Length: 132
Image: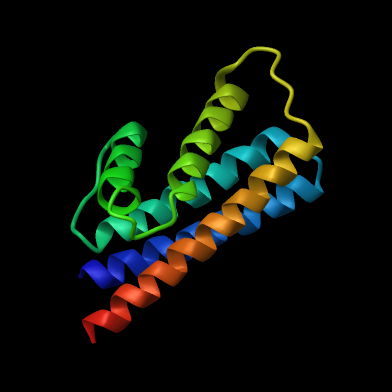
């Protein structure tokens, strides 16, 4: 069940990243950074599923991800920073009055999300290979 849940969440993260790219291309920068963050969030939850871990709060998911995967050096250290920064930008864009997200900021967030998902997928494949 853990592997199936992880695979489902990874596919969900890829779908969200595809949506972020569509929104970026359409000039919807605030929505693009939100989808990029959720792509990363879903990917982090995919990795957490391999250990039967999850949280009802975004901060909890990030804390568990950092504790079990970043601190243990299972994923590169930058992943923790990327996820936290994406959350900060998403919150600012969703809840901040008069917040403007530039095309460059949205492009950077999409790029970070792509890098993050690549690292998570590589890590998942390594974990599954070791399990076999």
